[in-house]
Amino acid sequence: MIRRIFAYLLAVAAGCAIGIGSALGMAGLLPGTNSLAFGDVDVGGWRSDFATGSEAADAYTRARVARHGLLALAKSEAVYFTRATDDDGQPLREACTYRLTTGAMPAGWWSITLYNGDSMLPDNDDEALSINAGQDMAARIGDEIVGQGGTATIAPRRPEGRGLWISSRNAGRFDLTLRLYMPDDALLADPAGTLDPPQIERLACEDAA
Image 1 (cartoon, one colour):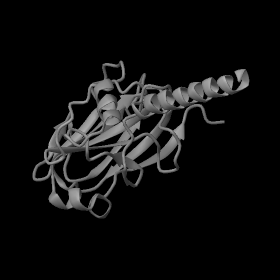
Image 2: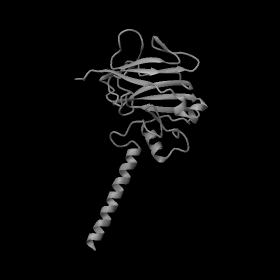
Image 3: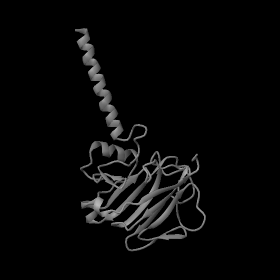
Image 4: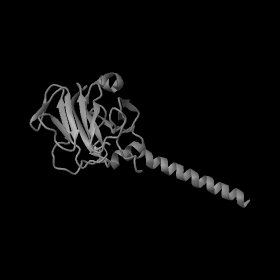
């Protein structure tokens, strides 16, 4: 009898541990699970959940969005794609320099912003944490202009010469969030067939052997 009671208690404890652990993980409350790179939409490594900002969002999605302070709009107004790895599948790191290549975006206006491992803006004053552009106009970023597409360098220090730069100084491990405002209907219906996902090529790492 005592052995049976002990088995029941052990099963209940294990069930609670698994349930609570999975809930915290899905909500992004466990170490290593706090990235916004989640969801069932994956286009070239850029992940999204089109339920974000809608009444259809489940409790886990709402918890993760609330934790990161994301001003989530309905997908008819904006969709969000996040990526935490380069083209080789390696985590994005401050110690490395990357080339970000973008094409035309199926939206009225878009931006790409860098966030640290806590989904916060890195603590630096470089004023170079994002790039953005409209579908029918070019946007000025500092002294540079980005239009329908182009390239930008992601690095902890400004590269030599002219060109778009996203600063990763003090970011540690980071991710990039692509926001597409006023997305085309085709993107919502077929994201994989519509979005030309930005490429992230790792060029060099300061701590490489």
